[in-house]
Image (cartoon, rainbow, N blue to C red; front, side, top):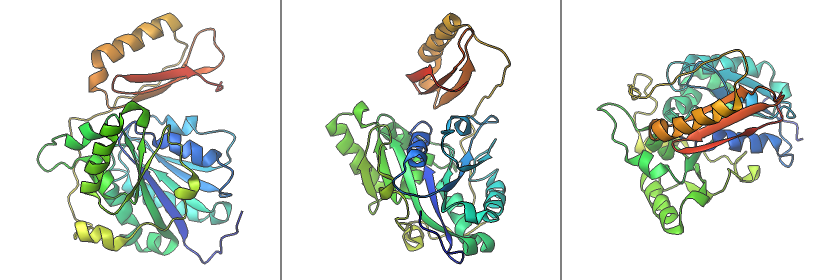
Length: 302
């Protein structure tokens, strides 16, 4: 590992992308990769009251993880982000960079803005890049969604602010659709690069310390970007439900419940995930899904 000089600003990588696009999978790959020789502090943002992603990050990787929960990092808990960054700098000798994984409902603008309008953060950190992960099956639908007046389309904002886009889950779309997706993405952001991938498998060397973020590019398409008083509003029709219940579940009943959930409500679910204890099984059942696509299996977690 290369020792970073204390006087050098700490590089920050922001991972964003809509719910279920593959951000946490990408983060796991980066943390498990031994080729980059870097150690990271990770800031996780959950929209709901209960954090799940922090629990499924690899236990074998010795990283500093801070969860910023129960709100969107771009607005309601933005102050928590600033405080987390200040606290982390006190342990600056223990890591080489910071990775921020935003909730899928985050507009990257206020997160990015933090590194330029807050004097302390600006002096301590350098925004290296904004990496946006998009789901090849869902992104065209997300981009075309009509929002209420005054409400931003988060997927559009995530694409516009990207320095690099990872077009993920390419096995779920044919070549013609992938070409159409890339064309739509470039209409929104002509200067970013696009990398196709499956299961968010991309070399960390293509994502870390690439010095891709340019403030001038952002100001060109959003001149009032540095205006801290700019309004920011989320779609009030999107909400989250979280629960924590003690005890074990019956596996047969669990399978029936999952089947009903997907069949009856799947089309209305942006994202769902959880960790369950099954009666008679020592390991935990980890599940996640996007719309009608469900994935779950018994893990090594106990």
